Image 1 (cartoon, rainbow, N blue to C red):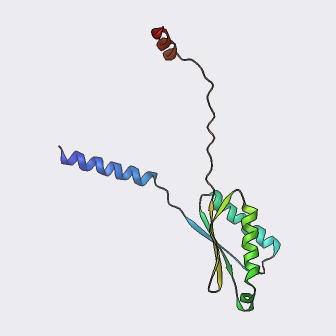
Image 2: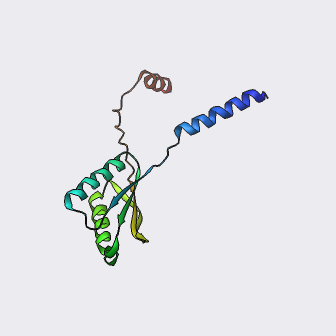
Image 3: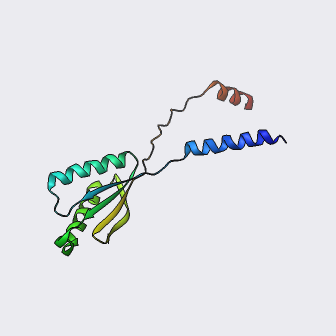
Amino acid sequence: MDYGKFKYEQTQKEKLARKHQTKVEIKEIKFRPKIDKHDYETKKKHVVRFLDGGAKVKVTIMFRGREMAHPELGLNILEKLAAELGETAIIETAPKIEGRNMHMLIAPTKKKEVKESAPETTTAEDETSEASEN
């Protein structure tokens, strides 16, 4: 066996494997517990844009000072966001508090590719095979 040919084929296989692999990107959006309605909508649009691009999104609620006394405000924001994203995203990691931040990881749902079925037509090959069978 030619060792040079073997090495060449190995490198070609590795190149092909690298070409077809996908790197999952994680984007982060930061919210505050006292976020206003319009600011929330703007950041939600960013989250949707990231998800449409195929990236996972880490949503962070940052608490400062006395805001730590009310973690339910941050939890409400995360639950509201998850409910509004509904069909376009799935929650990969449930909301949890680490220090002064609350995190939640959202991943895009898998898009189902719709393949249109071609109408059944007989080709010349089919006709010849049917004729030879008869």
